[in-house]
Image 1 (cartoon, helix red, strand yellow):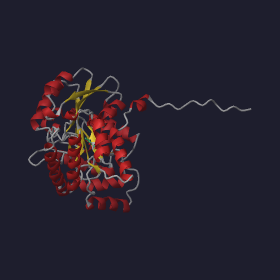
Image 2 (spheres, protein in one colour):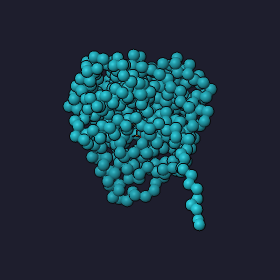
Image 3 (cartoon, helix red, strand yellow):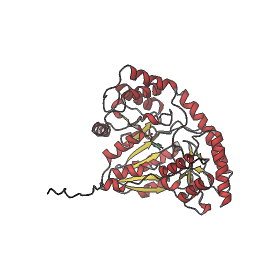
Image 4 (spheres, protein in one colour):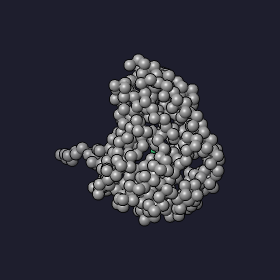
Length: 397
Ligand code: PLP
């Protein structure tokens, strides 16, 4: 009689075993389940604009689809879009860029993934100012690198201290991650912040930097976005820029971003993409092309609304006793410190959802267990409702 071959259970790779499940998804799933049960839930947890993609961008993608842009394209992206991104970087960001220094990716996230894969490996160290966007450490570890966190707090405005950066650099340090405007804190690096960071980097030629500029258009009035390679052109060969259409143009679902920088490294990132996802959706790239070539009127109109909402959220949080807020200057989040509640951020968020029906994101996901992240990518009535629920919760403790 035939015996079945012995069944060996499937095992996961060490890489997959080490991946952290998303804490934000856990809270979002719980909020969704409570809503489905009929509970009155208010959510200030969104990480994306609540606006529709402007019509002219959708029309351009639809026209490209109808006219037959339905096949494989170059792995690095449509030549016209690469050229338009290079032109944008050269004129709008004052970073002279050639089209062969640009890779069109499936969102800013894949730009980071590709860069980390081609630059980093075991033995390399990533320097990560905290609080940080939660995908950076996971993407770094997937590349085999270790992560050294540089903590900051709301009391010091979440700024990056150049002396702390200098002291953290070791011979293994290979990549510094900068994100301005920041998710989750809304901190915006000034020109002098960038100059101070550049001065440190000049003393450590083994280090590269990636600047995640995805929130570049979402700034308080009077502030200016700076690109590190424009502030320190002598370092341009080791500065990489990650950006995309998701936040500025309300195109999160389109999955279009870019990586720009040193052409030799970009060549490797293009080769990697050619063996993984190939090109970004062909006709979607024509929507992105229409977006980047147009005036920034639609971008500024949405940014203006975020400014009003950010102020509403920020003023409201500052008026609630029991919270310490360093007011955000950009992006669409606020990251108040709630340590006086005596709760860790996960318990705080779970209880806030259970007791007041308000969904926000625990700071521990961003490397700071004393804080919570609230989003103002919601209408003003929702923001006011959320603030009232948060205040009731804190008073009840
Ligand atoms: N970088 C930061 C700081 C983000 O907050 C996000 C998305 O939330 C991304 C990158 C990824 O953006 P994309 O949707 O273009 O992949």
